[in-house]
Image (cartoon, rainbow, N blue to C red; front, side):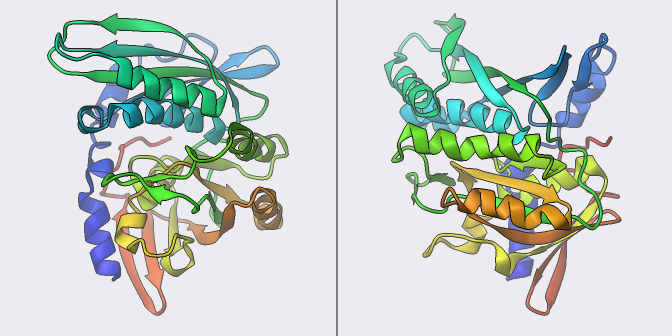
Length: 319
């Protein structure tokens, strides 16, 4: 089983499409800080110092195949992805803008309907943007701004810490996509209350690093966190919570509607788990952060290396 998971993750386009990012980071290295930048590239959001708090900035583009096959869901996911990025950093979202490109033959009603659904679900306003009405293909990108008192980063996982997952496994797979919909059927108050617990974890200092589980899937997202923190880890595949009837190779690549990874000192682990379980969200320890560059998977007595960051890259970003 582990050999199959390793092969699947290493060739998964949700992971491999991250590889070129490091080239862009190099290109922008001379202009990413003019005095107030705390974090630029390599995290879920950029972090800007602003008096007694931090401003968070993020942007996400939607895959063309999703836009073409399910524009309503594409619009909804554009909001979801950006909102999750803000909460992953321990912040709370304030507002969004969008860039929408349309061909001459495509209307935008379906995409806008999805965006509107997302704004209502996550209670974040869409306040402006830009329209290209005559492009060669449909595309959608959304940007977001948020605010945080304390920040959870992707650069501060430490050897010896527990890797804690918080994930909502109630829901359903959306169509044939590797998307697990755990939000559209729930009331906005429930969805926002659960997300807000990431800000609570940050403000109470219960975790040092975090990421939302996104296009690279669970294992790819953990790999990105380890890579930017220059650490390794062992993940216990058998401890990963998941819905019944979903194959493990699909589940570890799935983009869940609500899913976060955190690293916590041992004395804080139970507190973090209790915070999410109080919201009826599955939460548990699924691994340990280790010194070195190896991200390993174990199941029973088996153990395999998934990534060796002394030679492998996902984003190629190092501290």
